[in-house]
Length: 159
Ligand code: SME
Image (cartoon, rainbow, N blue to C red; front, side, top):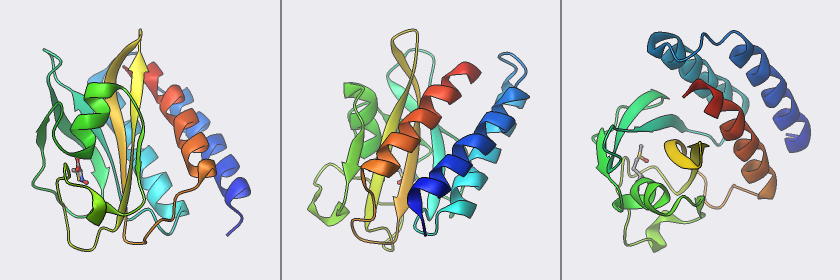
């Protein structure tokens, strides 16, 4: 797989999906987020679970939004807990190439070997996150991080 070409195509397609976005209508937003999850899961073979967590009103918990992959028990995650909660609390991207080396980690499936979580900012606040689990050890490169970061910046318009 030619990563740079794949990611360029993903971002082009994401622009098309997001161009149809109705402003701040939640049903429309979730539909777009669902399409973005599907796009990522379809196009990158080592993206085995792709989902969005949304910051709840009050700003101390995350709630699972649209996703593609196996259902997870982690529907509500307090800030600070697990990789997702740490990314929300710090506002930083967490790239975990080997989840077995993480102590503050919430396991969704024993198949998951690695994970990347990127915060989505709106008006300088974290409003949501993109979470991707992989069954492959250490598959993520700076190309994944850059393309997914761009996707998150584009997605911020939905919030
Ligand atoms: N592994 C995450 C929990 C969410 S699932 O991956 C879907 C974490 O440690 O926060």
